[in-house]
Length: 222
Image 1 (cartoon, rainbow, N blue to C red):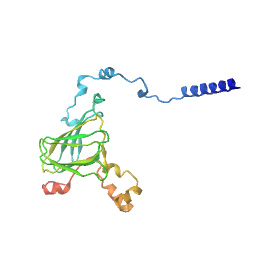
Image 2 (tube, rainbow, N blue to C red; image 1 turned 120 degrees about the horizontal axis):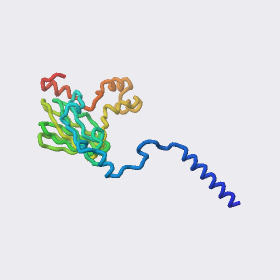
Image 3 (cartoon, rainbow, N blue to C red; image 1 turned 30 degrees about the vertical axis):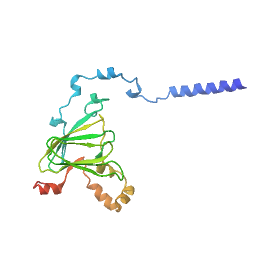
Image 4 (cartoon, helix red, strand yellow; image 1 turned 45 degrees about the horizontal axis):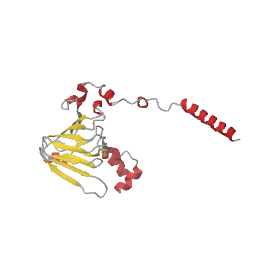
């Protein structure tokens, strides 16, 4: 009896394996044998490791300024290197709206920004860190912290931003918070659903914008 039971179990196992073999679990290139470091390196030519961030063809243009990325999405050769850069060109009174980088800490170096306000909050009940920096100054922002950068000056400013991850990610709070339904947002703001709907319609569709009051003080169009 024990031998018969064992034969039945073995048969069932073979049936299960055969069923799995005929089922396509994964058919993407990620399921194939991964490349070695040498093979990965030899996929690229020297120019693949560079990018002219001052080339306007690469700029993402918004009302608050222009950004030019040097990261995994623009430069595949950065895979595994652990660095990325962004060139930020803020308009007068321009703001990089509050956002999070889920996979990378960040350093901001002011090239021409005479008066930049850099702020972040790391978690609930943590202190609000605010620093006003000028030309030649750098500021650090921890990974996952809610943060912003605001040009307080009436002239344009430029910063180079560095990350310790080639794919730091970007989660702009206003853009994404209001993708949620009204139910969780109404109590969060202490307001009815119609208020949330009106607020949702006014959220900009880009990660940079300008402070209009600042622009008016500078005598600039809003």
